[in-house]
Length: 112
Image (cartoon, rainbow, N blue to C red; front, side, top):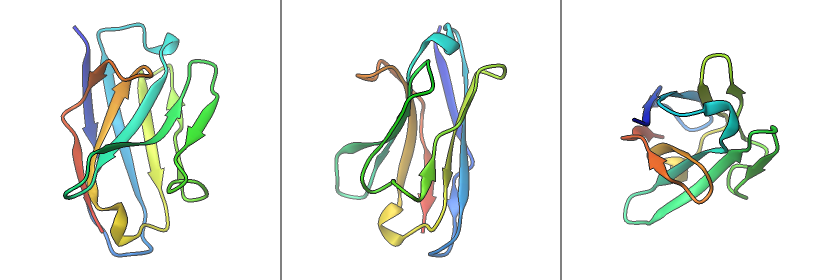
C-alpha cells in the first residue's frame, strides 16, 4: 500500500532554512506528480509546490524564490528545500501523491 513519511521539520529562526524529506513506497513513484502542502494554524490546507513526473514544477506565490522541490527517482523521495523562512511559514507540512492529491503523509511540523 502507499506510504508517505515526512521528516525534517523543526523550529528555526526567521531567515533560516529547513529541508523536508518525504520517503515513499508502495506505488510507481517515478510516474507520479508529487506535491507539498501545508496547513497553517487556523487555516485550511494549501498547496506549496508540486513536481510532475517529467520534472515540471509549480510553486505557490508564497514559495516562489524561497522554496525548491527536488525529487530523487532513484530513492523514491521528494524534498522541500525552504530558505528565508518567515513566521507565516509556520505550519504542518505534508507530502502527497498526484494532483489532485490522492495519498497523504502524516505531516511534519515547521515552526518559524
